[in-house]
Picture 1: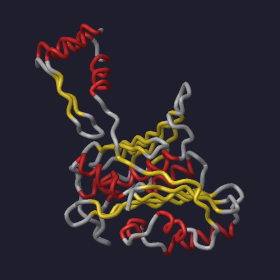
Picture 2 (picture 1 turned 90 degrees about the vertical axis):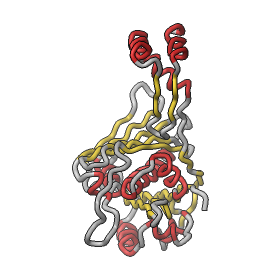
Picture 3 (picture 1 turned 60 degrees about the vertical axis):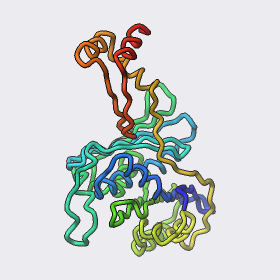
Picture 4 (picture 1 turned 180 degrees about the vertical axis):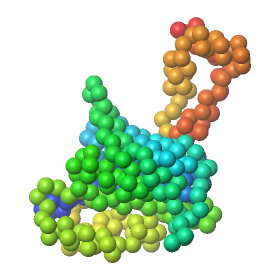
Length: 293
């Protein structure tokens, strides 16, 4: 199944939902960063959330940055996305891992991310200053943290499910997620109905692994509601780094710093955090950057 997400709403206009299938995107990220199994699950959950949050923005040039900074061995998770379904991300320590949870044998994402820290969103909407929202982590499991973020920072009641199923060969077998948001006129009866359904649902990664599409999952999550799909967006892990962008970064450090690199090392190598692509600059190329300045 291709990776894509849907945006849906009930016929009364009281409930909106985003559902994403992200198996291929998360596998692409795993390969790019060579993450440990638990790091794959953490990064995959954050990428899936970032994809859905990015599509919530209105304009093509808008950019969303999702930063999850916990006190666990994984370090910071950084995600960047837009409303076109293009997303990239990385973790500070991709090889970090922890023991599976004793209670159920599942990957312990909360322990790897850490229970203390912050979740921050930065939305660059083309205005003078970006919009920044932040809340504290509640578990490090990411879905619960994101639900708390929406409740505290956005005053938006939301149910969030995120899942990554890592196979025995450490590849990504299934990944996906959903965000259900309650709009102002939703009734207490409808809220109770949704809560009862969610309490019985299998993990979203299990549903993806069984072959359910985002549309199928939406209908299971909101059984009994008349749902309409508003749009469908393909999702892709893609980095927009380039030699030109890295040249601009090098140029920004100043003529004296570039000269020091030439004198000490005779060359420079820069690595993109998001895709691990290496860019090599020879002595001649570094000298040209100084001349261009």
